[in-house]
Image (cartoon, rainbow, N blue to C red; front, side, top):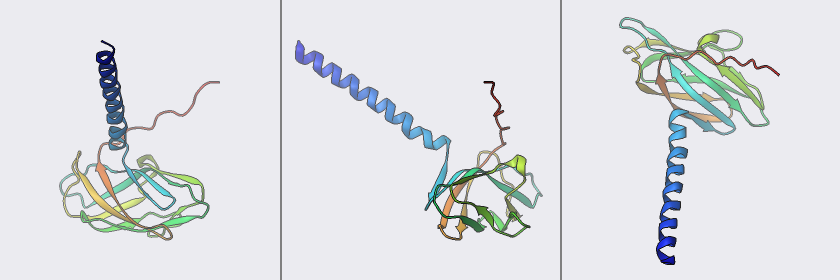
Length: 160
């Protein structure tokens, strides 16, 4: 009797652990991104385009620089467009500064940080495509860009 109870308890514990693991594994699928060196690229996304539209844009929920040194996004490329133009801090085609220990929010309501020029085809909602990012110090990293209708940011104000 005691052995039967122990087997049942172990089986239930394993099921709970597996269920917990499934939740942990499914988390990154919803919140995608990549890490390169001290940089964390969070949720790269593009807005759908229509037939005949030759330009699109890529945005990021954020790029976090957790390191002690500044870095810069200096170039990008993707097979879905002829060129990717950085909309840098000073003027177009300049690098995007990533100060040390900082978070750069690069969402759609702030303008396009990366302009896709010469789209090969429309960007359709639900699609994904590869974008290669080149950082001055951290190096090169491919990310997967999700094509989606952007959500409006949640209000950050709260009462105290």
